[in-house]
Amino acid sequence: MTETPTLYEWAGGLAALRRLTTVFYGHVLKDPLLEPVFRHMDPGHPEHVAVWLAEVFGGPETYSGEHGGHRHMVGRHLGRAITEEQRRRWVNLLFDAADEAGLPADPEFRSAFAAYVEWAAGSR
Image (cartoon, rainbow, N blue to C red):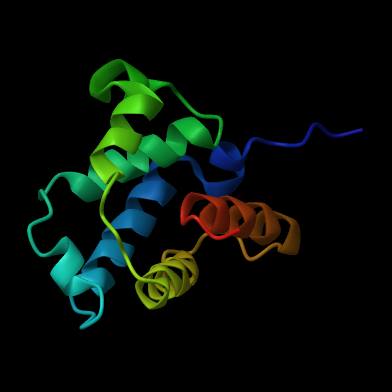
């Protein structure tokens, strides 16, 4: 029996998550619906998100060690008041970026990835 990899390992590690966030935020900044929300985004934000995803997907706990962990991340996102249309666009662009960045197309991986993205985006 083979052990199931973490989502971090399955995705391809930090390099794959960096590709994902670089592609994703490149699209976000060109999107007329999302660009206003992210217009003043710190240039290091895609890297921070890659490190965050690495941690929540079972990789190294670098985000917690360097950026304060989950509480810090949540605090940075409270009160953003994005619309449902913006939330859906954010989710769809992230799914498209996963394809473009070459994340695994395996249905099990994509199901787990999609479940996390939908949860993180606040849909219920």
